[in-house]
Amino acid sequence: MELDELETYRSWWKKQNSTISGFTRSFIAHTPSGDVLEADFNFHEKLVRLSVEISNENGKNYAATIKDGSIVKEKDVTSGRNYPISRKIRPYKDIFSCLPDADLLDTLGGAYEISLTPLGKKEKRLGRGIYQEEELASPWGADLPESTKYDHIFGITRETWFQKWMRKRWENKYTKEPFWTRFRRRFWAETLDVILGLGLAWVVYNYWFDYVILGTALASFGFLSGGFDWALRKRDPLMIKVLSFMCLGSYFFYNGYTRF
Figure (cartoon, helix red, strand yellow):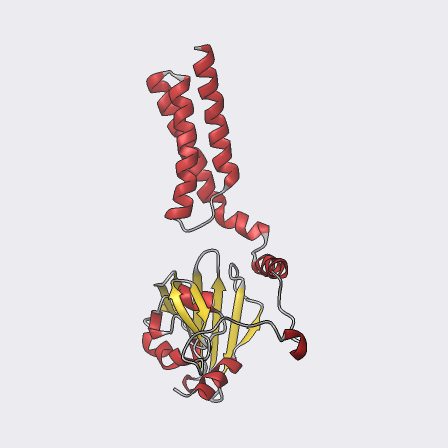
């Protein structure tokens, strides 16, 4: 496919505020034939929603939800029923592959044959979620380091490491979901973890009647629950929960060790 065609596809995509609860980024594209393509992204949950509105089907709308490379749900939005929509999305795979968001495409994981790397950009893939811009071929046959010697002549101003850090910090803050949205989504899961931890403490204490063992169990549960959040549930550990169990476990361990 020609680079000019890919650049045309890229120019169709426009960033907008997502209208779907729980999604922080959204892109929309209108094709010359009147089709409407949309991609919504939740970076923290590794969740993507793709939708296509096809003009020659009287504007019927189809949507798919993908979580970290796995297709979770496919639906005919117009009729409201589940429907396999692979053949509806694949004709637009090149357009979706030109989405100007590398994280979103990486989260799709190649679903519907959509590229893992934004097409039309001079970058190469080093690993899952890791990209590096490709340098143009050197006329000397070797990759030379980027020179900044003549930046002042051409009026080029490059970011310092501090400016780059501040920019990424503000970008993360801008794309972060509101506190109450994150609280509502995790409330019941975290409540179940607390109930499970307290239930474990009750069983351990009633079986051994030993504060040292009780404290060890509580601290271990706090550590393991944080590890499960990060490794299995693919979300940031709730540090208040982890520290609460570990502090409570330390308290019982200390009292059991020094007094009994």
